[in-house]
Image (cartoon, rainbow, N blue to C red; front, side, top):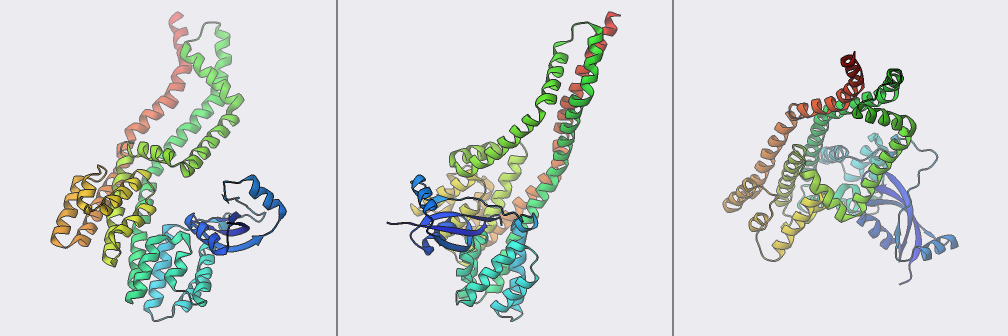
Length: 423
């Protein structure tokens, strides 16, 4: 079919404003393609430029090309992400206003006027515009990628059952717990990260400023230097002459890693598998994912969402590719006729304790309550590990400090000690 060229402007799943060019049959096709890639379209315009046509021919076989464009009036405030906290606040405020018998359109209007987050304010305006045209809230939310399928499905059920405010509160609770857990993990990792960064800075300062002074002193000795000291002097020379280049290479490697992980599924699976095997951190991550899995499954079960659809939603919102693949496998096994218990038993990522508790919940007809209890149990486990993370990492931090800073100091004093023994 003949595809046309369209330029678009929208917001991605991280709340960033982006724009680009896409080739599609019509505007609806453009919207569908953007939404599939977690982009909320704000403006779509047909382009007939001959240059774009040539670009299209030159990129044949790649019908979707995103070109990020940062305008000259770039500001950090305009490009802030829409986080779980913002989604939770949006849900809670909307639930409160609807519960106060304020109409949906008026509620959104109030929220738009009081919203300080620029990108969220744009999304609210977009939703309000859709509702003004007669679109249901659930359908309007479906067009906004940052809200996700779970949000859309729960709102749809709330609309159908007349419990929209209750569903919005459930969504708010869910996102608040996720955000609280993320904050706690980040806070626990802050101390070791700062100490490690200080160790790196001190080591670089020693290599650039202090060690060259020792080199002049060693030249006056006229004696052969220990191999370890020679290595440190060479390292100091490299850092002083090519330090900026090395820093740029490190930044480029980090950026490349993120880009490859985002676009290459096999690499993302390999990377996430390694992360899960990291002592302490891997355990914390694994237990937090299991807690989120059980909590989301409990919400969808309570809402009456079919199990296959619920697992699809959970898999799509899972950041770890290993767990995502496992959840998709469980879903496929359920389609093949197995129940969720036997499907989970076949996958080693879910602990026996969790599977046994789910079995009890299914047999007693209290699966939703049991899933909540499992989520709470693993939340406690994660909190315990996070609270003790500093104590567990402290010996490792001391070893790193000793190797980095102590190693440099010892290396510089070895020739002096050697000279003392000769004298």
